[in-house]
Length: 565
Image (cartoon, rainbow, N blue to C red; front, top):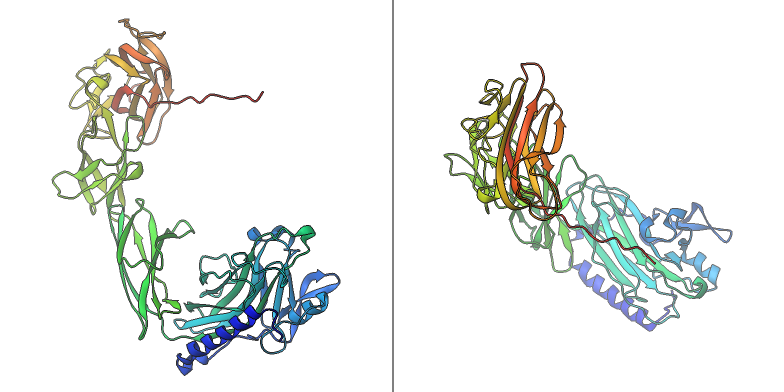
């Protein structure tokens, strides 16, 4: 080998001496290596299908090449601008030096375009054993004759403890990066084997070099790779318990002798999905945490302890737990316009246990199986519905959507919940519409329409913006709802007679359904207002209506449309 720069020679010597000291401190058992051709020496094998100017690209025996499409030009074109060669082949092609540190050659990789690639090898391993992989690498941004350009070409090494060959997999444990240019750098990473095969990666990512006509080459050399056992990894304990929608976790770990705890890495995922969510990264030292899940969903949580000896970090094996959120009362707190409300207290009547609705209004109460009276507190001018009995089956969930509505002068009608009777409502047949305990969305009763009838209520409001009629219904047949107003015009309107402004026919449904009808989204309304429910059909109908509200609707913002020229 002939040195290209003094900086290279000095740093290479320093790295060599430093590694000599480092590895002399390891027990003799760590020298049991299973890596093939760690020196990247002969033989070099042709890479099928990869040819540059009539000669086959080459990869050192025992090794494989890879590139990452998203960061390589052109990734979709088989990375045709990125080349792998032996150091001797590269030297002959460009009339340069055969550059290597030991043995007879090194692995070369080069391009004059953006790239992200390298080499990998699968290695036999003992599950549960800790391994350290290290390799010498040097980069030359725009060639050896160009000034040192630290920060351009980024080196990194990794281990997939499961033996996969996808460098973009979340399973790969990557080292810190190094972008020191034109100097041999030793890169190292450690991991505990999760399978009988592990995979080691060494890669470099380089940006577009913008040289004229792409004549300057970005060069990489891989040399002197080793893999050794590094002693036992740390152990991890993990506990996970669901409490309502909250999954509460705690974890701990123990390092191996002569190591110390660096931190605890914790992740979770919904078992119906593939992506992991990081709760704590490997440098985090907290030993407890939680996340909010969804009722009936099952989650996998995993944790591993990281230990360090001051020069290398070694993770332990993942420890996993599974949790299913069930035997809870769960649902969402919304307002009359269907928007989730956070910060609302929900509790089981007579119990000390309560919860507060989270973002989006979602809540969950640990209950166990049985029947429970659920109540919510009034909140910021909104009144909660009556106490509601919810049945929670064994290993199941009792679901309740809690709808809060405006009250007082912000509410257009009264007796919204039909509790305990139909006071305030007008009907043309008292036997066709009743306050029934047969079915209700909340509370104990709802409006039950069983045969042909009209039932209505009117009230008066002042300055109500975008009046909104909302209610819940559950019906085995079609019926009609009319939103009543005193006419619509500009400014305030104070006519007394009401008439249908909006009319909708609602179809039969198999469960409680929330309905919203706007009177006129662009007006501030003053005057009489009301609602009429009507049914004209055979007797024996089961039309149930609950939680009827007329109140301010959601604000709407209209953005201007700009036309060019």
